Each structure stands twice: as structure tokens, then as C-alpha cells.
Length: 97
Image (cartoon, rainbow, N blue to C red; front, side, top):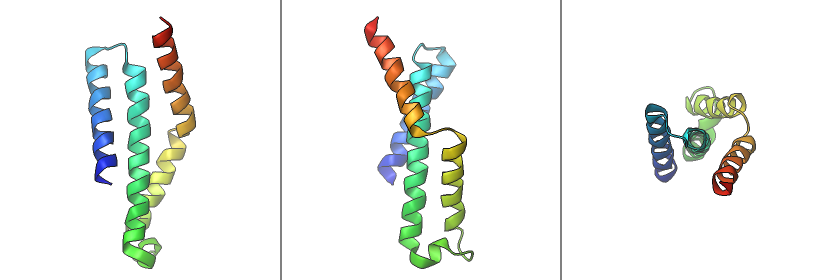
């Protein structure tokens, strides 16, 4: 979980830098930050439930709220496949020039 969260943090810093400086790689940075953040949240929420066992998905524990939030965020922000396609398109355009 730590590695995925730190990777998401680095991508978020990169996207924030690109936004602040008006860098041309902002679309790439934003897409990668979105993908890494949702993957880190989803993985951490699933591991949280596994760590707590059967009680993790009951109403008595808050673990299920994190899992439900991770699933809802993933749906609201679009599929990871679409964002990965956006990264690929951006890199192809960058390399074609």
C-alpha cells in the first residue's frame, strides 16, 4: 500500500507542478495522477477489508465506507482504460513531433 500511495503522491506533485508552471505536459501529468490515485485508493481499500477480515465489510466497521468511496470515485472520474488511452495518445503525439 505504501508504494502505491507514494507513487500517487509523486504523480500528484508532478501534476501540480505542471499546472502551476503551465507546462505542456499537463494533460499527461493529470491523467497519470488520476490513474495512480484511484489505483492506490482502490488497492488500499481492498487491503483494508482483507486485513480486518469479515468485520471489514459489515456496518459495524468503517472499512466498507472506504471501499465504497473508492468504487464511486473510480466510476465518477471515468474508467482507467480511457485515461490510459489518453496517456498513450499524448505520448504518441509527443514522439511524432
